Length: 211
Image (cartoon, rainbow, N blue to C red):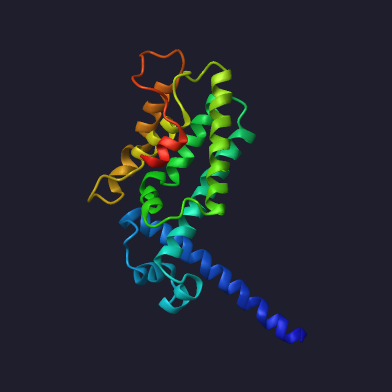
């Protein structure tokens, strides 16, 4: 029995590593080519066979769901790390914006519209966790007097999404050149005192999800 358990353990470790490689490869492929990239190409990028991919993920929908959920969790971790580690409230917000951009929020946004079940309990929990962490970042920056009071969480997420989405047909080459530069220009516009009056009302997280 002990021998069988020892043999099973490396097999489980290999399976876990294969799953992680597939998720990482799928995320990269979705960023570069969109959610319609062939699954065979994802398997090749991950260094596994097609059969291995299908052992872990029944179809494209399941893989997209896992990658999108993984990305939401990573972005939330970035927000929580900024809250815990930065003493300056606006610096914490700035750090989150740039780290979220590195997760390619904009390029991955299309995954949320590929049959993604937003009402799935795990997805709802992930969204609420992200919303809570980013709201705390923004509330702290407002209380410190550094963030203008007329912007909402949705305003922030829309900007990050738009500024990290590669222009159609260009892949990711151009986005690398200007993404962080333009995000910094945007962040400068968030600082108080405001230099202009914004039209309309602050965007909420719900507005962001349905836009």
